[in-house]
Amino acid sequence: MIIGVIELISERIAGLDRILTKARLYRGFGMLTFGGLAGMAITVTGVMRKEKRSGFMFGGGLLCAVFAGLLFQGYKKE
Image 1 (cartoon, one colour):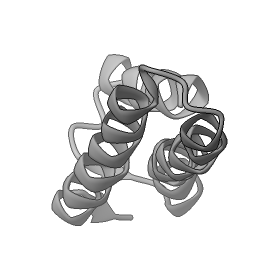
Image 2: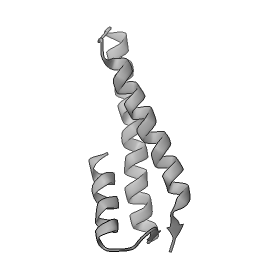
Image 3: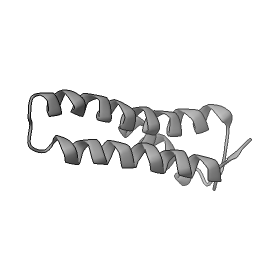
Image 4: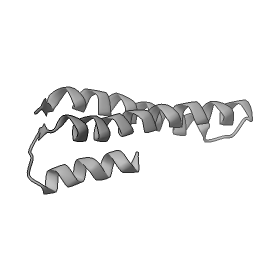
C-alpha cells in the first residue's frame, strides 16, 4: 500500500493532474488494490486465531481496495 501511495503522491507533485502514463497508473492503483486485498487475506488468519482486532484490519483492507478501484476509474490513461 505504501508503494501505491508514494507513486500517486509523486504523480501529484509532478503536476500530472489525473493524466498518468499506463505504467504509473497501474503501479500506483495496482499496488493499492493488491495491498488492500493482501491485508484482507492476512486478517483471515487472524480471525482463525481469534485475534480481537482482525475485523478492523479486514475492514481497512476492504476499504482500501474498494476506494482504489473507484479512484482508478476517474484517472485518464495516457
